[in-house]
Length: 317
Ligand code: NAD
Ligand code: AKB
Image 1 (tube, rainbow, N blue to C red):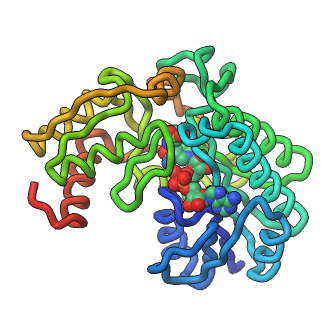
Image 2 (image 1 turned 90 degrees about the vertical axis):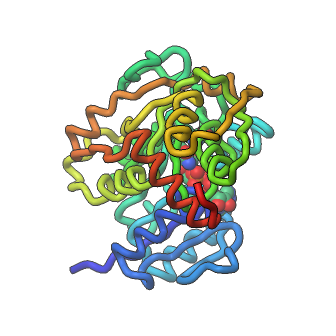
Image 3 (image 1 turned 90 degrees about the horizontal axis):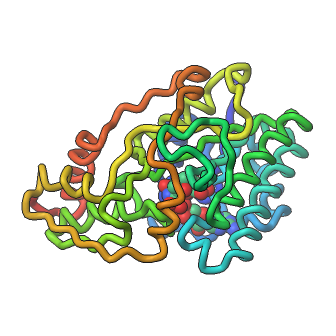
């Protein structure tokens, strides 16, 4: 059987830190190379310091470890990206082109490129947003992801580079902290709740957004990457859905377990970004093509989040 050697770029991040562990379980510790701008002091395993804006360093790592699959997670997310739009564009596009070019020139078999619900804007249907629709993203992050989706398809059609992609909703997990997105509130809220603190939400109470539990997001990623090539019919990026809720509804789900939990609202610039995104997503193509099915809903996710974070903080709820 062929040995797969995996490179994760952006491995310290919210998704990367969890995905790296899962990939190690699947492929073996020694076959997964984690990389990021700096190494975390407690990291165990193979790690390379990598700034993915430097193509030569990516290539050196790919050659050194005979990499067969790359998970390219490095990016500047929606909210942070608005602080410096040109630098966000530069980082998101340059790292992506470097990964695609190094992959095609060094016979990397498969590349994972994450996209986002941030590719949609107000020209798309807000409810059950279809796979194929007009994309007019409101953030530089969304513009970079929409462009990335088209480049993914281009590299597949022109060079047969097997790039696979998901339009992740907001990801919620207990294992790691988010890094500058608009959906980050839905992780932060659980940390406040288990510590007995009030949560001040930067979105309005009735702003509904598509979200997904980390376990489902990681499973979707691995299932997509494991699927036979002929099943992957969408070469831009697949819509992926699980649950949708507003701050008001997640607060109510938390109050089912922690009745004393309090939330208040101070919307900021992120409200406008959220308002331009879908409320729910039609992911029927992912379900048909490679069998996607989420396992968690708001209530089951909330129970796990509160249980695991209470253990981490050693608090009683
Ligand atoms: P994150 O911000 O938590 O992590 C990104 C990581 O990339 C960080 O550890 C950062 O140090 C690293 N990085 C930044 N610039 C780099 C560079 N030049 N070279 C190497 N590493 C660099 O992000 P995340 O939430 O883990 O998201 C990972 C990917 O998934 C991103 O592409 C993001 O757009 C996408 N995504 C995430 C979500 C979500 O809810 N987390 C939703 C949709 C899409
Ligand atoms: C963000 O809010 O920027 C991300 C995303 C949905 O892409 N979590």
